[in-house]
Image 1 (cartoon, helix red, strand yellow):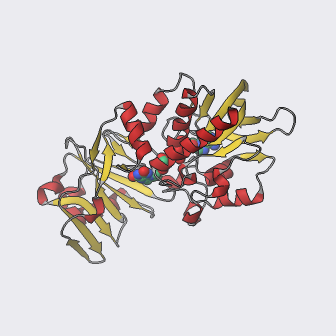
Image 2: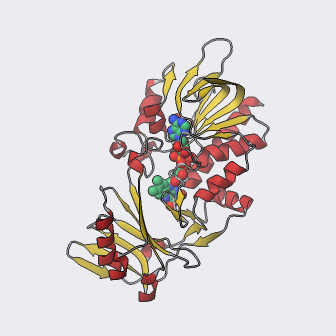
Image 3: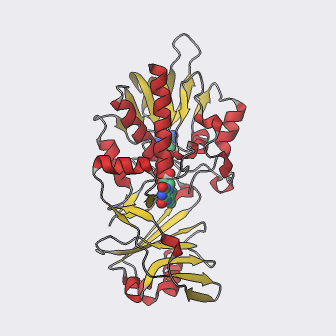
Length: 347
Ligand SMILES: Cc1cc2nc3c(=O)[nH]c(=O)nc-3n(C[C@H](O)[C@H](O)[C@H](O)COP(=O)(O)OP(=O)(O)OC[C@H]3O[C@@H](n4cnc5c(N)ncnc54)[C@H](O)[C@@H]3O)c2cc1C
């Protein structure tokens, strides 16, 4: 097993929060490594061919940290398609409503939101991000050398600070702490919901957004399912059409295309492909029983915004933000908060 010399900061998780944090710390001259359990960066930012999102899709114009990253890396954006009418489904009936209140004012990133993570990762010095490396244990030594020992499945690291840039409940489920965190902090972390951690996202890809020709926005609300809320996520140039929906049910491709045909007509029955991503079964996003975590008042809790173990441990995922918690913006603002705390401690 490999042992790596002491770093200033060891970041667990190469999602939006961990990567943004590494970027800010690196620019401030702080040595940093990021370790990522998956074989890719982005976490809940996950884009797939032909440029559709299986994780986050939108940002909003008031989200300044997101806009800053977009601007910094010259990432192309475009407004969510919103013209036309939305569909409404109740048992035994499908209605076309006037207008589309579901899709106002959101923006998208050309090619998918994972571009944010890839751009941030590529801006870091080579070797900063280590993929396919899972953190299993954190040891906060009691002796004179008050650092942290990070045990991963591919080596052992020491650092002055460790940052958990992953959902707190997921961290508590998969990482052991020695000594244990205080009871109240553990309880809050274990009970903090994982934003979108219990949902399945489905994207049906078509040759073109054919529904637009019929005056439809590609959006729908359904009380029938399996998809409960549906939106148009076609390419901006209309190189392909795509509809996405959220569900909390076990889903089959057949059930999805049957519902889409009921809502948008027979052409919807034969997509080019159907992509299904169940986030609840992903160990790097969601702990077991994620659907039972529903106390959203724990988002941005004071206990998880404070350092622990004498300033050696920080929580920094989107769930710890007070500014747009749950959103990409929340992840970036949590990164900012954590960077400021660490930089202040080291000055
Ligand atoms: C289906 C879906 C739709 C969404 N839609 C939107 C939207 O439209 N707009 C919006 O703003 N937000 C949306 N979100 C939320 C947005 O994706 C998140 O707020 C944001 O990506 C969270 O970033 P993060 O860095 O805090 O956490 P994460 O992205 O979860 O990053 C945590 C990272 O830690 C890694 N990790 C976990 N455990 C370990 C371990 N033990 N060792 C090493 N690495 C580990 C994970 O693999 C992951 O890469 C959506 C999310 C989902 C799932």
